[in-house]
Length: 433
Image 1 (cartoon, rainbow, N blue to C red):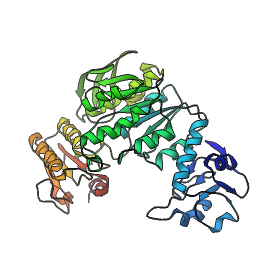
Image 2 (image 1 turned 30 degrees about the horizontal axis):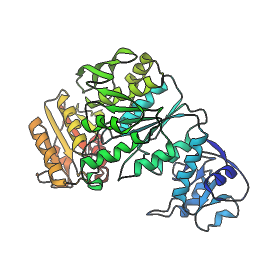
Image 3 (image 1 turned 45 degrees about the vertical axis):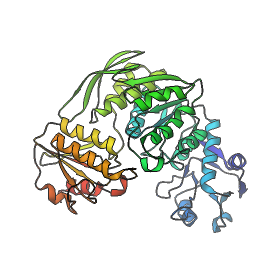
C-alpha cells in the first residue's frame, strides 16, 4: 500500500525526520526487503537498528527509529518510542484506508493450509492477498496489511495465538469482517491452562466480528461450534454436517481427497492436489468464505483443485527409490499428529514410518507424546523418535540411519514442533545421504 511518510508519521504519532517520501509496503527483514519499502528495525534478540544500513543498501525508502542512528542525517526516518508498536499502529492506519474485505483465520490445526486454500478459492473471482508462510503475529500480520496492493479486494490474514489477548490485539488492527476457526486442539496449552483456554483464546476472533460479518465455524468440533453463542455476526458452518457439507470422501493412493460439497450456493465435486483427509475440511472452510464473498462456486472449486499449500505442511515427495517422504515438519501438536498419521495410513504402502520430534508448549507433555505413540502403534506405523524420549521409545540422533534402506512401498512422515528443526532430516532423505 502506497503512503507518504508525513501521513504515516501523523497517523502513528511519530516525528518525521528528513524529506517527505512515498513508500510502498514495509519489512522488518533486510533479507527480503524490496526497493521503496519502509524498514522497521525490531528490537528483540537482535537490535534491528544494527541493520538499517543493509536495508538502505537493498533499496529501502525510509525507516522507523526508536533510538539515535547515523542514517537519520542522510535519509528519511520516523522517530517513534517503540518500533514494534509503531508497526502495528501503522498497519491500523493502512487498514482504515483500505476497502479490502478482511478474512481472519485461526485454529489449533490447519490455519495456514486453510489460509492458503481460502486465498486460492477467493482469487477465482476477486483480487486476493494473504500472509506469506505463517506471518501470523504482531510483526507478520501488520507487514501483510502494509504490503497489500491498493486494489486488493480480499485480504486473508492468519492469526496465531500464544496467550490470551493476542488475537484480540491483531483484530484491533485488522478489523476482520469474516472470521474462520478451524479447530481447537492441544496446541500452546501450556500458555493458556489447557484446551478450554485454547478455545477461549481462539474465540477472540469471532468476538471481534461486526454484526454485519460472518463467522465460519467447524461444525465437527464442539468447542468451535459453541463459539456461535459468542458472536453477533452471521454464522456459516462447515464439516460432515453444516452449511457447507462434505460427503462421499475418498482418498487416492497419496491420500489426496476427493469429495462432494453441498453448499448454500449449490453442489460440486472437489478433487484436491494436497494430501490428508483433513484437507477436505480446510477446503470446505475455503468454499464457505469464497461463497460468502460472492465467488462463483464452480470457479472456486476449480481453483482449489490446483491449489498448493505452504511448505513443510503435508509436503509429499517421491524419492528416486520410489519411497514417499511427507514433510510436515513446520509444527506439531497431538491433534495435528493424529491427522498426519491418519494420512500416512491412507496412503498405499507396505511399510509406514513416522520420524517424530518434540511437541512444544503442551500443558501435559508426557501424556501428549504418549497419546501420539499409542496412536502410531494402533495404526501400525513404526515410530522413530529423535530429540526427545517423551514418546516412550529410545530416541536416536540419526533417524535417517534408523530408517535404513527405503524403496517402493515405503512412506515416511517427518513431523515435530518448529523448534526441533526436523526439516534437516527431510533434506537428508531427499539428498539420499
